[in-house]
Length: 325
Image 1 (cartoon, rainbow, N blue to C red):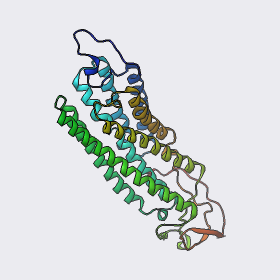
Image 2 (image 1 turned 180 degrees about the vertical axis):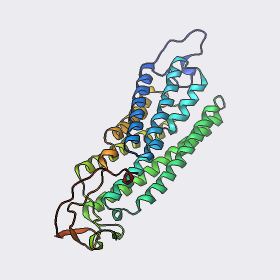
Image 3 (image 1 turned 90 degrees about the horizontal axis):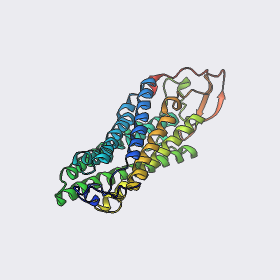
Image 4 (image 1 turned 180 degrees about the horizontal axis):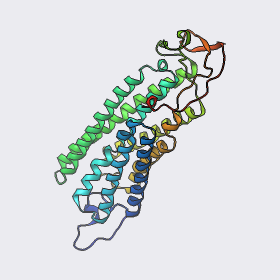
């Protein structure tokens, strides 16, 4: 974005400010508005669909981005003020982490509906393991940002903070990569009907047969597309922040505003609005059994084969909010 190349005779040269540029005021306002709208929509959606986990993920991420971009907006008025620089440094590095957590939860919900036995882990295990990794990376990045921001003027401390932030980003990117590998394996196993684990039978189902292979409905396809798009956007953002921190606080990458606006701000906007539009509240509806009295033989893999008996078809009912919590 355009830099303000003029400086007051009483001010230090532009290159001596914390950013290496003056944040573009219009861009900052646009991002504050975009994240404010998304966070407000997510809040309404979370309440309407009774999905409490969205408060700590999508809503929190939106609010954090508002704070981070508001600090950058403040810097556009006071480019040599230290407080807004430290604020945006600490907040923008950790703000997308709750959205990463949403990925893990969403995949767990999807695997519950398509068949848990196609994954190497249960939905609960996916959530526990990867959410723990996300929290560790969030705390690490936050601590590093705090050290780097509060140690301006002491290069060794700034470098230490930057290295801690880099470690947090690398750890997060690694955990996302492992998650993506497991997710791809899950979908391949589902499509080829090769479970990774033995299917569990549902004792409540007719004749003790479990309808263990869920159907990929049009809405489920959209939900999977949403998951994949969010994952791609957040990976791009993480790769950019990793390269930025490797280059250092005095490097060209961190001192080029357009890179940050596109590869951080825009990527997070795309991810958070993808979840707004392709929302689990209306896409992850109850998985109805096709025929209400159908008896299916279990294949050796644990998946249902061709129906043996069928009667009337079940009429879809309203979404039970407890099933999406």
